[in-house]
Each structure stands twice: as C-alpha cells, then as structure tokens.
Image 1 (cartoon, one colour):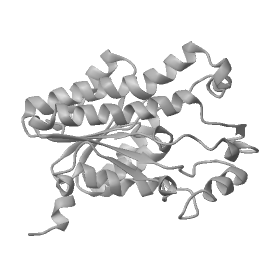
Image 2 (cartoon, rainbow, N blue to C red):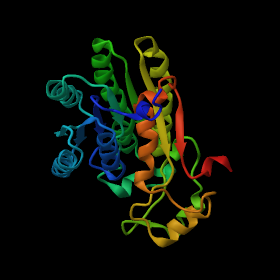
Image 3 (cartoon, rainbow, N blue to C red):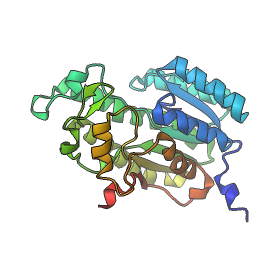
Length: 272
C-alpha cells in the first residue's frame, strides 16, 4: 500500500470560502498542490482572481474565483451551482469564511454595552453562513453519492475563553483590540454544528470535521505578539501556512475514518 498516496487530492474538486483571506489563500494553494481543483470563494473578488491565476499557473489544476455573500442564501445557491457547472462535482468544502464588522467600535465594545444588532451581524457572518454553505454543498455531495469531506474553521476562542490581560497595550492594524463574546460564541457554535453534521451525514459517507487555529501572526503589534507567545508552549504565534497540513489531512483519504472531530492547531495553548 502506498500510504503517501492517501494524502493525494488528484481529481478532486474543492470549495474554500474566505479563500482570499490570510489563512484561506494558503489553504487554496495547499489543496491545489495536493492535486485538487479549487474554487476560491470570497467577497474580495479581485484578490480571489489573482490567487486563482497563480494556482493555475503554478499547480496546473483548474481554479476559479467566485464572488459570494455567504450571509445570502441566494448568493450561496448560485455559488454552489457555478462550482458544479465548472468542475462537475464537489468533493471537498473548507467552510472557512468569517468576519468582524464594518463598525469596529461596535465590534470591540464592552460586553455590557454590546448592541444586539452587532451580535446578530457577526452571528450571521460566522455561523449562519456555515449553515447555508454546508446545506447547499452537503445536498450536492449527497446527490453525488460519493461521500465527501467538509472542514469548518473554528477558533481557539471557540474552546477557550480569552486571557484579557494580553490585550493591555495590544494593537492590530493600528487599533486597540479585544476578543468580544460574540466571536467566542459564534466559533463555539461552529464546533457544535460540525458534530451534528458529522453524525447526520455519516450514512452518506460525508465526513465533517473542524480545525481550530490558535493565534495567527497577521499584523499585531510587538506587545501583543510577545504577550500571546508567552502563553504558548511552543513560544510563538502561528504562521498562516501552518494550518494547511491539517486541512489536507482532513480533506484526503488519509482521514477516511475521522469524522466529528476538532483538530486544534494552537502551539499547545489548550494543553496548559
């Protein structure tokens, strides 16, 4: 038996939502490097097109960029239809897209002052969208009768509460930050949805798992990076590309008996 071949995604077709993002762009390239055709789904369509072109040139697989508002059911339906028409089938979904807010003052507000409208906006982006995309992709996978793999992105703050001490003097892209309760609640919901769908679609051969990244270095100031790194057994923040291996594993036949699981990629933070 060629065990390494279990990781091959040759002749598979994948969707990555949030595919133009910091982590998503690396996931798209990683899936392509493993042999998959990749649909890069994002609202940043120009960046998605750049990545699709890079993937086709470098990895010699098919890649398309698709604009999609993941909070819109109609937009999600149209996106899935485009993928089916382009690739013929869908074998892999990385349900990855998430967001903060266009109103950062409201997003980072103290819990006691948090607006319900802001709570609902983030829940729609981070969790309702997961439901919508999984619903329409899962329907296609079920109709195909070939099984499939769905991977959903949670967060370390979906399983742990934040240590608010690390935010004193901490900035991200030149603004003071924290982790609001809505982010934790929505990301915890991703894990709950994953476990539900894993058992619901098991008889169809559709595996559903989640990955939980720890803090990824992406523009935080040195104070934050140092305070966060001091809490990590490996002593540093993650690099975005360090999420790729877990996704390829879960997407491939190497994890054919793995479903309903949450793989934590956090440098050991949750082991303390």
